[in-house]
Length: 180
Image (cartoon, rainbow, N blue to C red; front, side, top):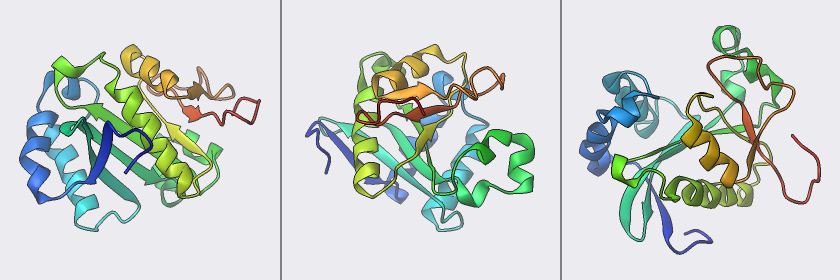
């Protein structure tokens, strides 16, 4: 259930596997995600409990599956191994939540579904007590960056421009009055 009745989230289960495999093979996914087989393996790890620090969901708009969204806890990834390739991980409290999202069908891009789903997902995460929520698009993925901005994310000023392959954005609390 979400504050927006058009949006719903369902934990990924075996019944979604064929849909996810098809989405992962689509050009607009392949452009920003890794190898489809490897990425599907990561999702399986989450579903089957081998990665207990992340949760994958299918989001629907008006009852139709529209995309994939997941959240993951930064704390378990704040290790020497992970921070070697992703030093920005150490810039946040361990209880920070990262979010990833992709629209399922290319025909559904630029229709506002990503912003709508992300906004609803952030509200759920806030209701669960998560204060620091980030997302890390490739800065060349301007469509995603714009969608995330519409959902209330802003580039973290102290990290902007420090990394070529990632733009760290944090959800801004509307009542805080200050940038992340």
